[in-house]
Image 1 (cartoon, one colour):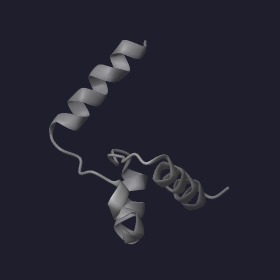
Image 2 (spheres, rainbow, N blue to C red; image 1 turned 135 degrees about the vertical axis):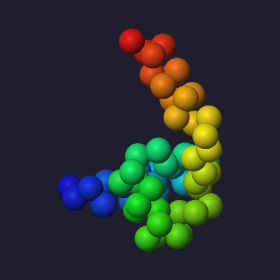
Image 3 (cartoon, one colour; image 1 turned 45 degrees about the horizontal axis):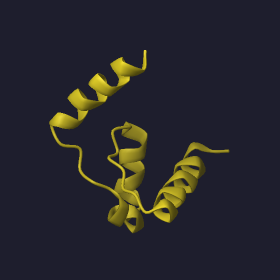
Length: 61
């Protein structure tokens, strides 16, 4: 499955679940720039997001 299709399917699933995402993946962020139909399920990447992500990932190991 091409990467764009995988992202599209994942975003469709996110929409169905009723949650939002913060696109920290550069590929997903670029995809969202070209597909505004998913703007309603995305929140911006704010300065604290990378720090929080690192903290959360450390707790998983």
